[in-house]
Image (tube, rainbow, N blue to C red):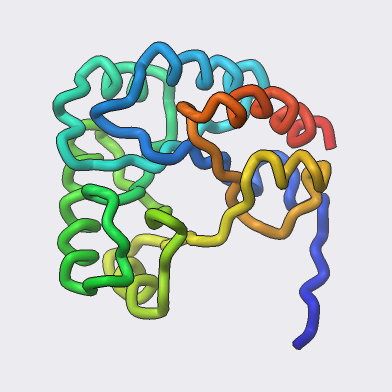
Length: 178
C-alpha cells in the first residue's frame, strides 16, 4: 500500500472540521456557550454533530445555535449504530434532515455517525441522500500530541467532557497558528 503524502499547509484553517459530538435536547446550554466562546476567540467554525430526536424540546439551544452561525450536521436520530440496519439509517437520515431544516433553516451536508461506525452500505445510503458520511476523525488529545499534523479531516470532542474543554483552547491555537 502506498502511503499518502500529506500537505500540512492544506490542513490549515478551513480545511478541517471541528466536530462537537452529541449535541441534543439534553445539552447543557451554559457549558455549550462557554465552548462556543473559545471558537469565536479563534474565528474557527464550530460544527455540531446533532442528535436530532426531540431537539424541539430545546428552543433556547436552537435559538443560540441559529443566532451564532454554528454549523449543524447530522450525528444521528437517537444514537444507534448505523451498521445494524440500512432501513433504520435511511429513516434516521431523512428524519434528521427534516428536523435540521425545520429548526435551523439549513440543509445538513455531513453525517458523523455514532461511534464513527460506517461501512460501505451506510456511506452509500448517505450519498444517495446527497450527504457525506465522515467517520474518520482524531481526538483533541491526539491533535495536540501531533501538534496538528494529522491526516484526519475531523477533530472530534465533546463539549461536556471537561478534559476536552480544557484542551480546546490549546488545540485551536495550534490550528490557527500552525
